[in-house]
Length: 55
Image (cartoon, rainbow, N blue to C red; front, top):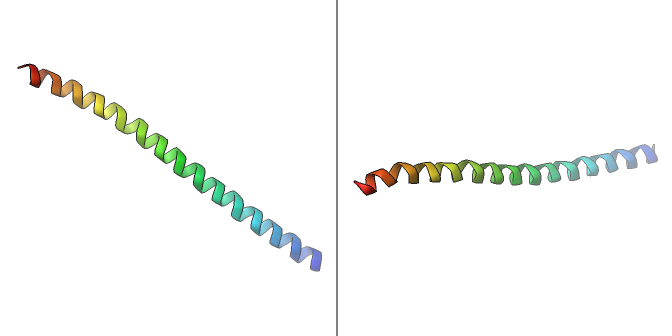
């Protein structure tokens, strides 16, 4: 039973580590996607602003 308890503890630690890694990857992916989303918006805004600046 001692070995079983140890293995279950190891799996819990492994799951916690993988969850933390997943969270970090998710945060990085969120950052990257947010950057990708905001960049085109800025260029579109500039294109919309350029004609109004000319007139």
